Image (cartoon, rainbow, N blue to C red):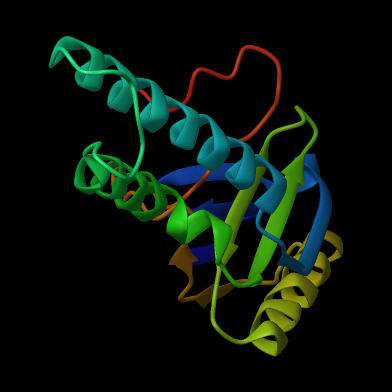
Length: 163
């Protein structure tokens, strides 16, 4: 839930004074596929190392294929792919980012980009008009479903929420 009331922007249980908002923007967030590919390659290397260690401990030479144990390496590669699949093949996601003077950013999302642009316009209008109030239903950007809707990034001394 995102709400503007009495010169405050409420995002879930987090409150931000409207006069501290420095930027409001609706845009499509592209996933960091390069980082996901790097994690995949590290995981693949780790799977290979685990395979070699297990194969050596079994008393044989470290081999892949022919007389080795290809099932183990296949399972390890599938596990690594499963862990990184979401990040590697994620779609662009429409988000609304609200940055405050401290440098922190609150990010929320909706499936419809036009709705996010309208909400951004309403927040910008509320900054200049003290009597403006509204409420909008938004979704949490991060998908861990723990804690408040706000996803704070950056800022000095930002230690997150202490509940």
